[in-house]
Amino acid sequence: MNGVRAAALPTLTLLGLLLAWEALVRGAEIPAYTLPAPSLVALTLWQHLGSLMGSWWFTLKITLGALGLACLGGVLVAALFALYRPLERALLPVAVILQVTPIVAVAPLILIYVDSTAAALLLCAWIVAFFPILSNTVLGLRAADPQLRDLLRLYRATPWQRLRFLLMPSALPYFLAGLKISGGLSLIGAVTAEMVAGAAGRDTGLASRILEASFRTETPKMFAALSLLVATGVLIFWLSNLLSRALLGRWHAGATETTQP
Image (cartoon, rainbow, N blue to C red; front, top):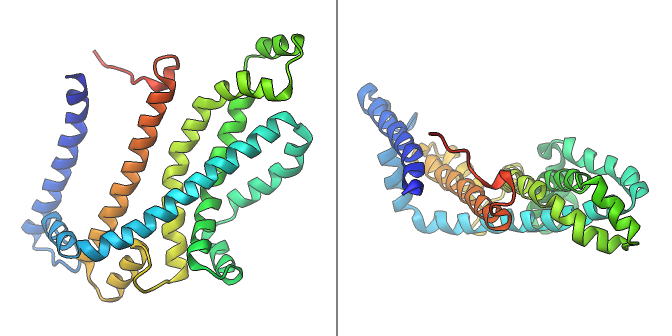
């Protein structure tokens, strides 16, 4: 019952915004090429569902692939940083450079040096998603209780044992927080890189559909493709939130929602 009440407010808010959008377009008689009504966007999505779902699947593969590589690489590098501080001092500036360099500036160079367009898009999305995983995991590894660190040293625990029994459980909430951030960033990176690439054809993502629709002034189709992107981002965040609840349960305060009386 509490779950239904928790979902009711955001659902009603979203429905209210859609109804207000629909009323604004109809009342002001705004042409569809300027701002289509939600009903027209839904109809357009249904009419082009076949082609848009194929593009959605391409974008989803790039997004999830980049997110998976970011998680794997970020956790491994963060573990190495935690165990070997000189390695962190040597390589952390490189990670910072990757983070602060705009992907729209790097993507054209990657597209030149990488033959496969899909691999280039995957690399661009990975660059965007990598640093939040790395930085949050490193922060979590450093947040371990100093007294427990001393206890493991007293018992002469190996670096692997310190990492497994103390550092990794301490870093788990921080990693999951970084995962929520990187999930959206990997989608943004995939879409941005594809727009910079200007790819066309059947084996392309939703960004290409948006570009094609903009060239033809098919604004309802642009909104239809955009709605799929928004739904994908919400789905990724929702799944990462479920993963956080499943792994943390009730032992960590970040896994529970604050309830209002």
